[in-house]
Image (cartoon, rainbow, N blue to C red):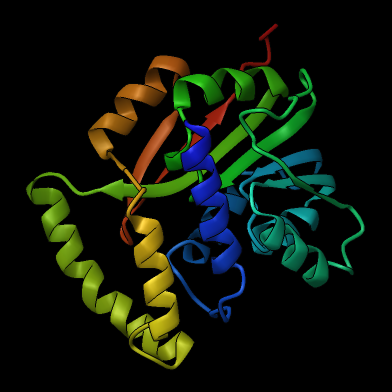
Length: 229
């Protein structure tokens, strides 16, 4: 990823951090699913692309220590302000591709709506090495629709999306400001299809469980072998 693109993504998320938070979105809809993939308690968890720390705070209830990394200084600033009652979260501003991963250190590594910005062929080996044997790797990311099955899924998702927007957020559409900011950011976004995701992840993560979800997301759940060295 070029320095220019990295800088633009950082600037985009500095602006996104200042948007009014919403009660419900396509990412936090799946927080409970991700948490169910974890053991009841972990010593150390890494959250890649932590944003304002919403999921980091949930992880902190399941771990002794959470390291939460994000490229955006403003995101980390907001996360720290909102996480003062969670002293076991270490928020860090960093480019995860330049970050020094410790070896066999984390019981779990999670990332939500971040890896589509990153070269997976560079990131995945770092994550594999940083997990303890038996550690879990969890991804939730955006997916590009393909084929008739996804078209049918999208047809179901749209009315449910509108219903939950109205019930949870008390409005059918985001604010004009949020729409403008996210549209600008979307100019640089590129997503995998489910087939592409399976091809990439299974090449590196043997027996990874890859699943497409309703609200334009896919998940990856992988457990590192206990015999890994």
